[in-house]
Length: 355
Image (cartoon, rainbow, N blue to C red; front, side, top):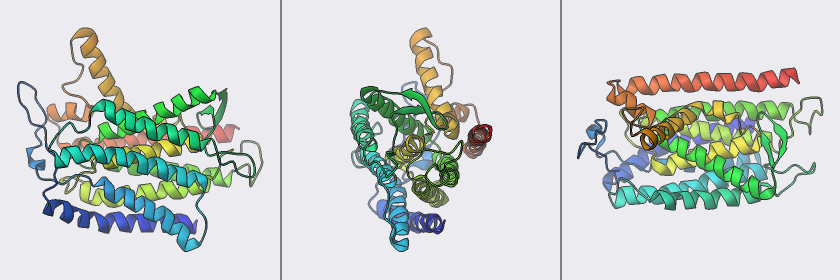
């Protein structure tokens, strides 16, 4: 428990006090992301006031998580586990993919960034290498960080062959990272929602540690490798987002950029996979799922019928064009995320009680 508190404190301090240093550095070099403006009959929400706001703030989040996780282990003189290091690998690897996208947006003033196909290839390379590594490093009980079984609130009997397992992990990582990326369109929206999701994974990790089959082999115990270390990683992510949110809330003084959104998506995907709660993420990441579905519905409807179901996708931009204030959208979407997570945690606990 002390390691969890240390991880949170270090990560929070680095994000809270390191972000303004990053803001000064980026602002001094005029490294701001270009803002899309309405033109040629295409209407975008009015974001001209955000011009000049520096991007790539995700660097502060990633550094805070790495220092929080590793620093807490160093202070307590406990070795990091395979699960924790793999979670860091997925997060940092995807942040590098996002950094390449931000580089083009900031340094080359290309609002579209890296081509979609190139970004997907980068995500696939990191996701597949993570999947291959996650089936290795068994502990004394033979548990590996990830299981080839599809999981809901724990592993199900549906065990995938290796080839399908790799594709399944690739799909999960790509879906979650792009969901967070799509959500990062308003000041504080993605960061605030991420705090709630990582907080939920912290609680899950602590609960799974207390009911682990390795320490208390009772009916309904959890076959998860390193649940406590996953909680240490999760709380570092939550604290980093919390500290960053201080500077990212409306009016934002910095954007996280793809460096941050892809990194956060990678952290969530790693936690969902290694805590054996892959399908439960539909609720633990409910807001990200809804916003992704809004884009799918918009594109699908336009291609099939020639009509759009929303004024603009993702969903938060629809409400902007409908006249809602940005801060109103953000707070209400946070509330939706909180309700969705509450339902997910209730289902998780109810399954344990029934078992």
